[in-house]
Image (cartoon, rainbow, N blue to C red; front, side):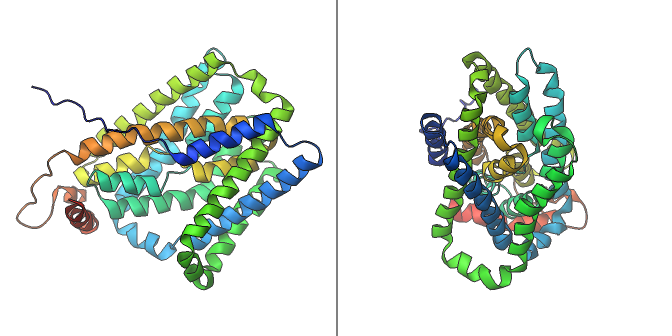
Length: 359
């Protein structure tokens, strides 16, 4: 008898997504106008700079570089995030204008350029008993690369306000994203301890800053009248397209990793790190790149974020129920298929111990 698919007792709904939707509703009812709009825009710009300063101050480049031993896995995740995703996004251009409007397609393509998540990729990899250290390093590499690659890919591939390598776009990216990030990295040795001690409080600063960015972006969209261009039918079509996109990436990362010779634990890390997109990184980037059009541009990313959480929660629980393959007598597990240098087994072994403690 075939095994019934595992469904969690409660489909996860990210409370922060609810807060974001509440912020969108507030911007729809009470959009910032006139002087208030200017103040909201200035506060949003400062919030973006603060966010990327904190990203830089928190990211341990030493820990990230330590994961370079597992270079094949990280290159696979980066290829999925910044090559396969964008190619699928470009292929979706055939859906314009019959299925997606040009602004919605721009948001979908931007979604395909955003780096992978860190926290949720690690959490789902741990639940599924995968290679947790590799997921940590892969998420860190993706975030670090996304600081440069996402804005550059966006200016190269997107039409309209974010399209083209204009001097203004490069200046905005440098001043609002790259410079604060590099400053955070430079000051990490002095402020890292403070950030660690106040991690919980600063988490509220992060989320509050992103809510401010969302309010400013959606307020500008309301004033400009961009929301009148979206019908419920177009919104439903967008959800269907994103469901297909997520399905393709989940299948490509899982079976593609198997064809590349990765073992079970590494395939899990690749699947969760290579198929997901970061809302926290994408929202402030969109506010810099799109300006008044940012509200409509981030809508596909917000919807995709919740969709990936729900689907990956089901997959992670299903993977957790799978029996682990026995380790060979020589001490190298199936994840050692990466080659004779033993780097994969070296990184994968701690995740077995973590899974054992979780059980």
